Amino acid sequence: MHPFDPGYAQEPYAALVRDYPGPDVYPATDFRVEWGPIFHRGRLDGTARVLVIGQDPAAHEAVTRRILVGTAGRRFQGFLAKLGIDTSYVMVNTYLYSVYGQHGGNAHAKDEHIAAYRHSWLDALVAHQPIEAVIALGGLADTAYQTWRQTPSGAAYSGAYQHILHPTYPDSAAGSGTDPAVAMTKLLTNWNGALDALHGVVTPDTSRPLTPYGSTLTPADLATIPSDDLPPGLPAWMRSDEPWASRQGTTPTEKRATIMVQIPPDQRPFS
Ligand code: URA
Image (cartoon, rainbow, N blue to C red; front, side, top):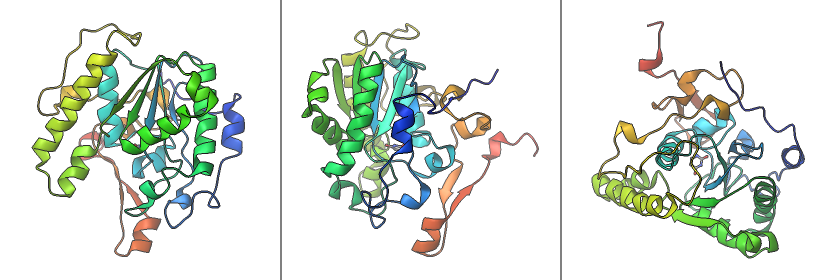
């Protein structure tokens, strides 16, 4: 059997994907609007108990048309698994489009038009799903949550909330000179705190004793993204633990226009 995400046929989500903000709200100087909006990942059928706010989609997401399927998604899927949450979640990003350039993300953190559309999603999700906890991945997602909390429906939300370091924090910290091992330990210590706060608060799909992270991320700490989360027919290697999409090009324009998709070497039965 190959369970799949049936998409956005039902309201209120159909209306939200029919009428989304374009380059007038998301300027093409700061967002990769040319790759289209990417809306969500997870349950829209009234069974999501955890609502996740991510940051912005990247190369893998542009191909699968669902968010948090690359490195960040696979790391965070493992966090959910530690809570016993296997499929009862729904994820939206702070931004509908991938941020382009260094400053685009922060520059639009408080943009009211971007927030208005995001609020429509958050309102729909808490109105139609039994959300017990909201988890924000990184600072921009926390700002998105706090901004929503200032609206009437955001203020009415009474479940748990955790703001955790973004799953690719170690990669960006290492990029700006932090020891990668130190950065990873910081992430995992932060995530252990959130696991302690949420374990027993969120109703699990599968009850499991809490296994905290050690000081490094091990293969056992990752979880596979279920096929239920992706459009029908996507090959299993698109949910594997290996990266398979990357931006390529020798000029900024060419790189912006090109995503290379390559089946990971260990996922090639034909070779
Ligand atoms: N991909 C997403 O969709 N969101 C993130 O926050 C990171 C990667």
